[in-house]
Image (cartoon, rainbow, N blue to C red):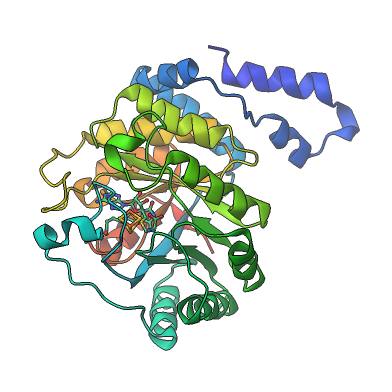
Length: 345
Ligand code: SAM
Ligand code: DTB
Ligand code: SF4
């Protein structure tokens, strides 16, 4: 594998020099979109200290301010989703076993109240999730558009995750002030149909392309701990790191095994695997916000700090993810303070 730093210097030297080169040109020259599976596997498997060193080197180069973004999540429409994602407590396919109560779309004012509370607690991004297979035009979508406007008017980054959407719907969300659309690829193209059978990996890529075409920042990542191989993890990261542009944010989730789902009995992954995944995502996608996402409740403070060292620079903040629990906000603020990290403003 080529040495990352040397490659960068070669690139910079051969393309621009002296006064022609500003900071923006320089950092953009360092970003690759041609990552190969084998070199990603090599990163994922290298001695941990070497991997951390490389990831931290890239992180310092691209994220000088070292801030951690606090993103709060809210499920605006919970349960009874027609998709059969094997990890998901919101799928209608497992609702008998999970006992999850379905809820209709929350009222606009209630959502904006929650956003305001999150903002007052220090969050700068508010992510709203709906358990839909796809967005349908009509009253409910109109309401979501109003929610996006409201969050954006509060001065927070607004993000939604609503399933598949058309180019026109993406444009409406963009016009309403949407900053980011979350659409995870979840795993490798090869492992995908072991996890989800009601849509294809290609369907996922189509929505991603519509989001990017509309000029919305893409938030896309996935889950580890579902029985995938290291090569599957590498392939998942490869798909993301060969997009142009790279996703603006990359959530790395550790499976939260929820009783009643087909993945409910899976053992939780070793936190070191999560650290490796985050470090590799950081090296591959230097500018992205890499978000330490679901599964954080299973990490002690020291493991979380390793994730920050590996290049994580965002967390989900607040006691709930969508339907499952998350770390308490006080503990998060305390960890950030004790480590001398600062939060994004
Ligand atoms: N329905 C939309 C979709 O699938 O794009 C949005 C909501 S969906 C719940 C958002 C993401 O949450 C999924 O893509 C998956 O990565 C993550 N997720 C869901 N259940 C999870 C679990 N049990 N453990 C970890 N991540 C999970
Ligand atoms: C993401 O990658 N993870 C978040 C957010 N994007 C939407 C969701 C995690 C959900 C965990 C299971 C639950 O709480 O239902
Ligand atoms: Fe539905 Fe999203 Fe859950 Fe899949 S992950 S079942 S699409 S809510």
